[in-house]
Image (cartoon, rainbow, N blue to C red; front, side, top):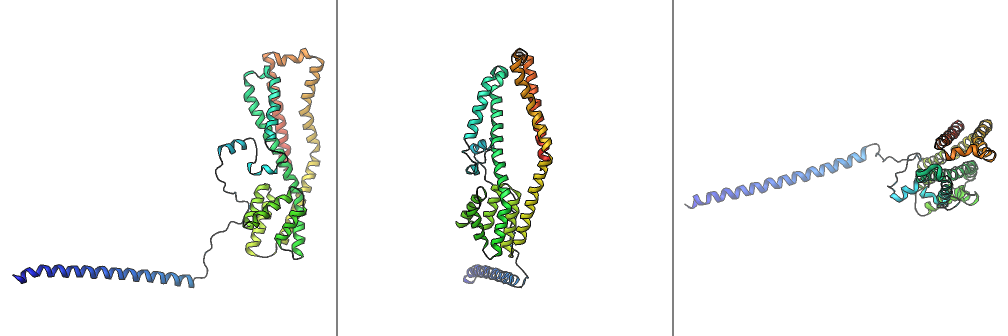
Length: 322
């Protein structure tokens, strides 16, 4: 009886010991496998020829990833305002929209009988167009000054580097000596570097603010120089020479196109001058355009065709000179 009762207990004990032994051997095997994997990884890291480095984007032509802007900022941007660069305008940016909409409001009040119920939509569209034209004119004027100053800036940096002055000190000299708008741009870039921003990021931000491809070439060449070493003297001298030649070619193009631009200006102003002369000499004849419904249609078509002709002539001349 005792041996029969002890037999199942013995079997259960042996089974438990067998399971424990199997689990222990499995754990030991896993630890040995992990140890061998780590050893192989260390050996592979030591014996291989090189370690792959993460790709570094050096080009300043790659667009920056901007965060999604709030709705109010996008609404203001519809007027052509560069919200991030409002300090670059020669006057407070809000003066331009106020002046544009006041001028359009006065004009629409005087022509209320002509446009009728379309007064508000026309006022909004024309006001936005005037704002964008004003901000675009200020931006183009600033970029033109920057481009004209840039060859001398590059020559100054090259001369400073040639006599042993570090690149950052050469750019500080540019920030101190070059007038607006190039000097303040370099000052802003150097302030970013002084608070810990890498040189490549500071140059890239300055190139993005300027909107000029020449600044992007400058930023890319200096970024490559800081990564690979060497002197950027030859690159900067070549860039300065190319910019000078481009400016000379552009000036020659404007001189050759002066006759076409004068003709376009005369053709644009002539209908307005004739309209004013007819108003002064024969008001009864010209008043039909403002009082008769058919005259409204004729006047609207005349204004639309004149505006379309001016825009087309302007686009052709600018595309030819670009």
